[in-house]
Length: 79
Image (cartoon, rainbow, N blue to C red):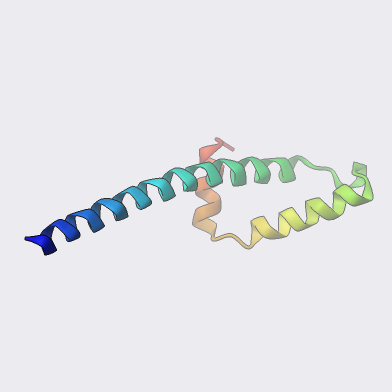
């Protein structure tokens, strides 16, 4: 009986953790989608040098994402 109670508690804790991770994923998808749209709209010729470097780093990070993840992010912000 004690073993069953522990299992139920473990399952409940895992369920809670998964729910928290899913909420965080949705937030990150919003952020990534907005960042991707932002980078797509930039004109590097009009940016200050410092901003250009930051945009390059952001663009590189976005390009390293899994294609499905990036697509999910863009769909999240309706890009």
